[in-house]
Length: 585
Image 1: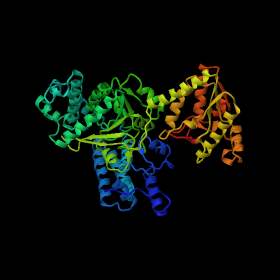
Image 2: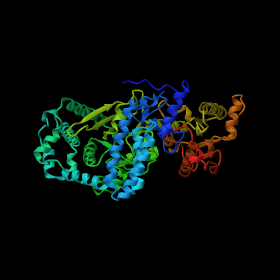
Image 3: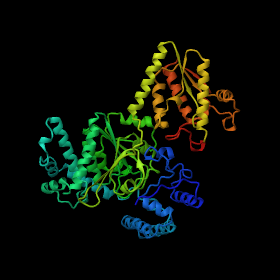
């Protein structure tokens, strides 16, 4: 069923209040939980919102049934499915009878209280119950033995002679598909890729009940005898080929691996690496049943061996620069945490995950619990997403969800080319005897004042250009392009700033702002009184860069407030053109 977009706030106060209550009760309101929920700017790294007033991390039918107050038996049944997973987990993991009964009683109380109003998302209810289970049981890595055993069985299979014989079988290889060795090699790689993908649909491989004879493995590797499955595999193959033909390194985000199948996933990833694809594998931040967590990556011996050459990034908040430096290294496989303890939820993912999503070329989703939020929703995403899961043993689901057609992406290469083009023109100006001045000013540090900030900036830069002879004044606001966010802008300008072409780096002062208002024939409004570049975290970051650049190029002059006054601001907001509040630092 196609649901209409949710009306913007302001027309129905009762409905607006109920929607606000939905986000508050589910702990998904950024205004109320800024340390937990992604900012609108961070969310836009992943989801194309445009004029959408709300994003919800669930299927359309669940959200609309809740906000329209029509949720009934269907939602209750979804709640019960959550309990049907939690109760056996507790009974199997907690040996002490008193502690087990105490924990179950506590979970029942929480379950009844949270599910009664019919406003809680099943996934959010599940996370809260899992958090209680982990804290009260005091089990550091629930299901660790079982997950390690599953990984070990999968690894042993890949090391077996039977697997190697079946995997390297020539049957199915069309030697006529390639008229030279290079093309034939590509066909071999994709045949291997298909065989491993087909094996991931058979959980008996890692649960220990599989027939691992050569003959049976050959059968499993052929995949389901279905024209639809074969067509989708072929479609995936052609999609990957288009990226390979670009001759540029591709970046894939591989999310949602589970115990056992993760070993096959890593084998698939190593095949993708042969095609000049670098892969970022995201795992769960905390326990979520059989999903791989960062603790599993670090503590499971089988995972340690499988990821022996991977770059494991444990920081949940990483800058764009740092992430790109990791990606440009000689590593090809990276591991990050998605920051969550539930199925795919862009509102709660870590900064590192959001930036990885934004920087990648393609997203692969591997967990069946993630697919509803990806496929059964009206929202489109900023990257192409391929969902590869198994609905039941032996079946394979491959669905491609294209990114929104209006998405504008600035790759690292694009931003670097823009920066280098500016540097070239500035060097030409220097050869003509001109002085280069870079002007850093407040753009969005004062809430609801972005347009005023732009006017101040443009008016004052025009004044400087008229007043100063032989000076090229760089106004960063004049180089903004549609689709750029603060991450892109800061990355591009840092390349210019560190190039050594700047002679004078001027930071906005109180006097500059007063002069701009005077030139506009206006009085300085209260919100602008006393403001200068020290009020901006973006300018603070630039002052730090300026001081580093000055050490390398001592002849560069810095004009503006002293460095000490910038110390109150330390980090600009993720994807924002305005600052974080003092209390967040």
